[in-house]
Image 1 (cartoon, one colour):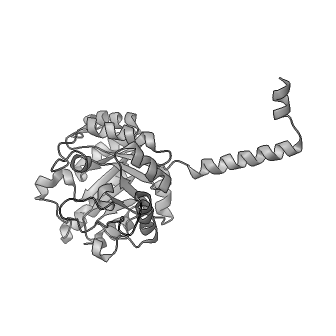
Image 2 (cartoon, one colour):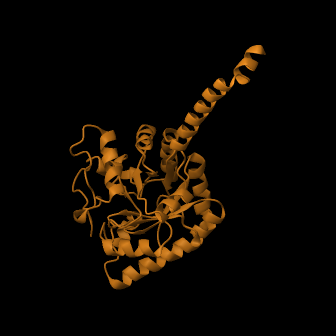
Length: 294
């Protein structure tokens, strides 16, 4: 009892030490403040660039989190880069949930964004049931590919406390409908349709929008139309943020490299340095450069 009283009821000098410790703790807490959907929207409003990378395990999650990547995407790209599939189509909810749980264990502050894989959101109720599995695994937000047909699903999810990131442009789950991995929205009509769908999905409650493989001018137009963040991958430098597949960013791309990819391992001596170089290039606007755009 007396020892406790001496520690908690000491002199003003002791209080000063206690205050200093408390202040240090507060600074540490502030440094690891969690990234949330509202904080990303606030970043977009202040024109602060957002960094996103795909991530599939706890070790890379901890490293990316330490470096300051705001959003970790458990992409269905894991089917290709982790499982050796020829497309994202074979990936299941169970696959995404497993990797989401691993990423969530490694991260302290990043927002965890999980892809809804092919066939997992044919209607609002099924989408919700599957989204719940990902949220319970550790996701903070789910991502769905598609346009106007998803309006009711996005609204259904957000009304039930599931934050949603939409995805327009090149949607890899539709690769067979699109005839391959091609640049989208190159005509005036298709560009106008994409802009209309972007506004529709925002109105339905989407908190963020990924734009993939579209003309850079269109990426800027869509970004200017919306209040939510746009995250580009081959969509130009004017999006609110950028995303790359982790393996592409590290130069691990068997076969032909996509135009929008930059190998950030070039000139670096560690993966951590490459991640930091990616963050710096996104933040200062030097990535993507003209050669990475359509």
